[in-house]
Image (cartoon, rainbow, N blue to C red; front, top):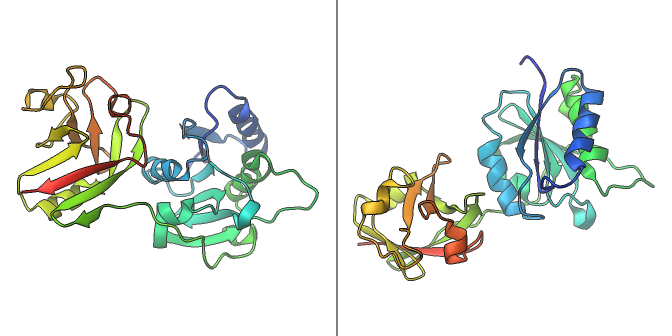
Length: 267
């Protein structure tokens, strides 16, 4: 890898100075480092949303990239600060369920990052994560950062559940456009459906086709009870099924955010 890369995935928003503090420290510790903002708009303390962003927004980087993930990063309750290796990349975060949900058994190696007594850890990305990232980028082996972690905190992302002829599908994530990403991949949808007709229900609305784009479903025979905009079922670049409302916001129109539920039935 050429120029060293660090990415940031956080719930800081864009109104604070936190990103500036961490970027300044990284540039001071690592010569010619490139700091990439993956996302700073993750809902505060929403580990499930952060998991979705990390899983789909970070793994496309070159081997050797270091990813800092600062969402719900507090060491209380046994949530250790950890560094781990996945697909040749490094992730520094809190063991709050995110590593298990994002990577499962893909974790090649994991270590805990020791904390010093009489230190403040209210801003882990600055006081712990940036320093660990700099050490990795400067050639320190992962195993030298701290004691090996044999078992990360186990946690699973919500998945679809079959109930008779229907499937209950949770919403995993909603983006800045108000689109909803479902806990069912298009591959699973095809395997379960076997080319049968289907109906997906979102409150009183119905969808009976998968659209290739956000707008090509506008001519489908759907009820437009909400502001005249049709409900579209598409396939996200992540591979997940995605619900949108044309130029509108699915989240605002249906008041369904991450942790909401939709129903699917194959005929």
